[in-house]
Length: 167
Image (cartoon, rainbow, N blue to C red; front, side, top):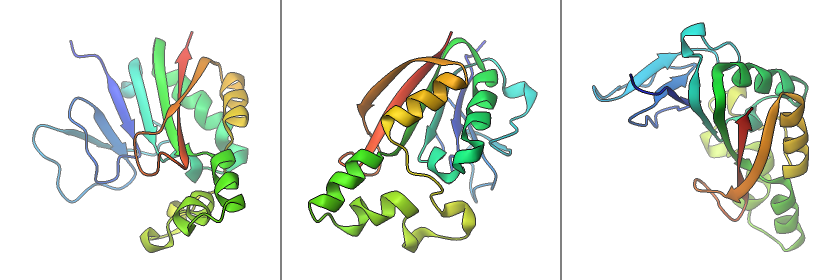
């Protein structure tokens, strides 16, 4: 049996070996990829027991007031020892870019999202996270062992990648 890995908020970027999940179905789903249409805050029960959940540039699209409940829901969908990997803009890096005269894609876009890519309210960034606040919120949702990594997508000089584990 294949171990379940979820790629949440996949948009049109479908990853092989993952169940790619988004609220909107992409135009094309290659035959070697799996796609599920679902609300990321109410994942179906059959997506439980994942060994890995990746949400790349997704978490900043939730309001701060809903963040802990979203993390708790994702925690419930992970298997014991499973990993949650989040990649998102890093507020501390954004502030540094503001202080040093950074370009809009390193400052305003990190805070609000790329205005050239907006198709609706779902594309707006609703909160800017520092590593410390993210780690504290994830701990309240039951995650342990936060690890800060260099971002692998979008703007590594602006973004962060953080992994958490379910005990």
